[in-house]
Amino acid sequence: MIRIDGVKVAKEVKEKLREETNQIVNSGRRAPHLTAILVGLDGASQTYVASKEKDCHEIGFGSEVIRMPETTTESELLELIEKINQSETTDGLIVQLPLPKHISEKKVTDAISPLKDVDGFTPANFGLVTRGEGGYIPATPFGILKLLEAYKIETKGKHVVVLGRSNIVGRPMSILLSQASPTGNATVTLCHSKTENLEFYTKHADIVVVAIGISEFLKGNMLKEGATVIDVGITRVSDSSNPRGYVLKGDADYASLEGVCYAATPVPGGVGPMTRTGLMLNTLEAYKKKFNLD
Ligand code: GUN
Image (cartoon, rainbow, N blue to C red; front, side, top):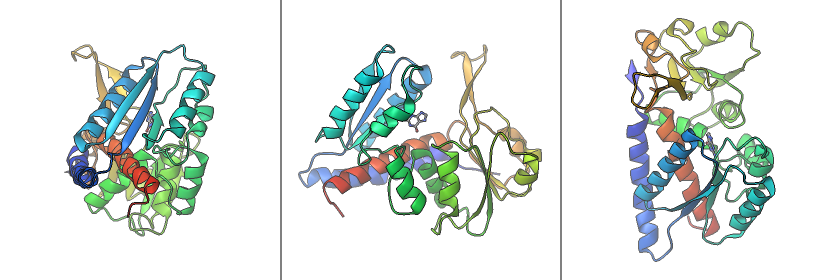
């Protein structure tokens, strides 16, 4: 089974981004800039935001993390977003999710200017992406398309089963894979928690994209021989034998895929690094749009 190496592909994409950023800066322009807002102290979110900051640094982007206390009110957050929407020096703006319970994620993500919405969460971007008319592709689906491309995994005419219908991953992924494009043209089945006889679909899939947040849910015996598995899940599972007290698990039971699948993404080191790469690609795109470059 081919281990789809997201770290390697992410490195290659980041290298290209670094070269392009260098050229921009050498021409006398400022570097693209990503701003992230982090509310509260969620452990996983802090790790994600730190990784995004590191990626920006490696590529040569400017970056800034605005850390807000857990007690921040919705209106304070909306005010901050509006200020950054107007800022000349920020090209991309993300608000790390999840947010504390007293803040509406919908209101907050909808408040981000579609021009700076490099997560691709706003209705304006979702609409454009759905219609195949540009717009920022949400980072995880974008990263997955890049992985499929890098490993030359054909989607045209294939049956792809997407497990999970979130607005961030499953829903846009299913739409993108069915579009008339080099990484599309697939026949897509979108399965979710109410799907009956799920195994019928997974057994008839050439590619399964699993994004349901249940660790090791998808097993090799639910798949047909030669299938490819793209695992979006990343759950912290308690493990006292690990110095951190937890281990990271995907939505697929990777070991059980061996001998059945053609290829699969590991967790960690598969989709995760590519999600961040998707975000970086969108940030450069936002910068270029702003300055009418290429
Ligand atoms: N939380 C989990 N995934 C994401 C993501 O892609 N973007 C943001 N902003 N928050 C997240």
